[in-house]
Image 1 (cartoon, rainbow, N blue to C red):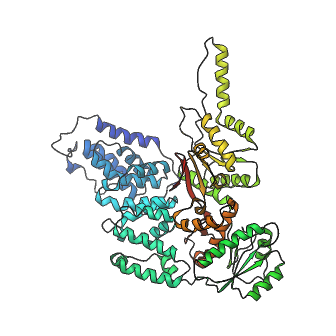
Image 2 (tube, rainbow, N blue to C red):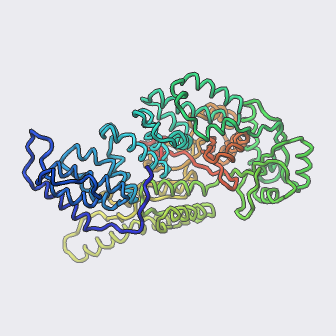
Length: 616
């Protein structure tokens, strides 16, 4: 069901008061006789004809009934109000009925309440209702529609794991999936956005149909860019899940994925700065590309030093016989080639795109953008319903850019400008935290009181309560200083203040003391640096070969692996924007400009160890 949102009216308090008064009058009457479930109306039923009544007339007629019968009439009025798109009346009645003393009324009101919340955009109330409601407790006739609406809402909020949980339930409900033609496409959109570990988490206690959907999602990403293998895997899937596949309308995106021909280059030219000051960075990417190529039937590779003029590079690519190009890495070289009208090869650039440069059909951009992390954090804060976040960053160019990206994305999500702060050194950081949490003012007030009274006042300083989250943009050393400062500055009586950081705060070389200091910190990081399950074997091999390599080069190695593996999926991602590539550097999705937008994994320090999280 599609609900039209009413924005031209304001909620009318009198309407709520009237509905509340009507319900309160029921509560003040004597308890009903338990020998009957429904009381008789005050007036004979023959005199109360509500068959052709409007919602507001039904609402008035409810006054003719007593106790539970009155509540049923109010519920009928709320349902009619939804049909008439009188959403404020539906909201007023259902909001009051949720406190009814009759359990059956409360159960039957839940779907009405959800519809009213959705129609009037009551975001906090929707989240609370979904969290409190167990689908099996609803009337059977309401379950499928409740699950459908809940799944659609979670999907619109980009809460893909929750959306998947709801939508997968629909298939188990009687004719649930058949009632909604859009079901396969929405479920596929939701499943496609999950990480491998999130897909795995849905297998616990899963039905046969759910297992079928999960395996379909996994094989579609495992064989992306390999059309023959994908077709074979899909045929095997159909044989194993005959019942599901026989009644399944294949999602449109999956059908297109099966029929699209990917890039299948016979030879790839890789342009990297193999000479000069960035030679070490180029080698890390080169090793990653070679590692990826060695794991499969590889296209031929030729590595070309990108520190040459465009015409020289073009001639070397031509002579190599390459039909696809990866690189260059350095931004000036990327800008130069991307604006060269004579460049004729499909190319995956290893840096970001200039916004003013027009998008070209066969040019793609893959960068380890820190700004993407900031946007991802803003999205998480919005999904967690934070209202007053604070962003603290070092006075470095990258941190300040991330801070501005967070602020811009946060405001684009409909929030007011966040509180932004910067620091340059340890002393400034300590002072900033004290001023930010206003513990300095609290200490001053305690000092003033002690000067006024003879007996010394023993009191802990209080901290601000209006901040609901802090996002820190700092390196690992600064982060290890920051977290204890906050811990000792927040009042013991105040709620725990959630602390978040970017991958800049994470290091794989932390000792037990560092881990203890960072307990409670949540951060974003690429899967490769967290040694997630799908990269563990390669990670072990890498550490044997490059045990001493610094973390910047480790990240570039992962970028090289993903760059090679991305080639086969770029055409699918271009034609099907919902298609996601799950790589070592994160969840990569192509936008309209040809840029790959990264979503990183989540992790946290808990009980002196690092653990993965299923955020949001």
